[in-house]
Image (cartoon, rainbow, N blue to C red; front, side):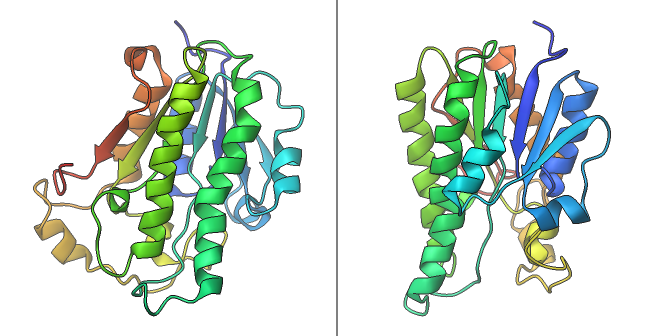
Length: 246
């Protein structure tokens, strides 16, 4: 099956992984639409023959508007997500909890609901949610973000059962990736904040001895979008250099 002309929508496509994924998808012949925050679209306008639309996943009306009129979709990837800070559960306020859950888990719920009717009209459609190794590898200080991503894993598996056999739905769970996400986040900052991650120490404790790049994550996503994963649904591919083996 050729990917030529197939329609792929990337939510959060202006981030580091999203930009690499856009380039790869265009090379493979996909027709790409990027959905992202207005600030992200302004800072990192999609390159090449790519459509774009603004979206704020915390606003149901914005999600509905972004998907309106997109037509049949053959692929949908949810790359949207952010962390609000590194702190313990005890030190986390309710406002921060609500912000993280709204922007990550609730946003994934709204986006999936909006994408499903379009995917049902597509050709061998596939949805891929980007979660995090922290969804399973519990670490102090990352509790709210990890819980939101763990919720996305459960959401992915439930959707996979409910949408089968028409739509395949899987997830990719990366470890830390060397993108602006570590420095404040695309569309949410100037991307120049000091990262709290000790990158050298992180690389030393990873069997493959380095931090992930966006391209390390793009390959597994493309695999889950394509026919080579045609008998896979409800699964999570952990991409972490061997640093954690669920």
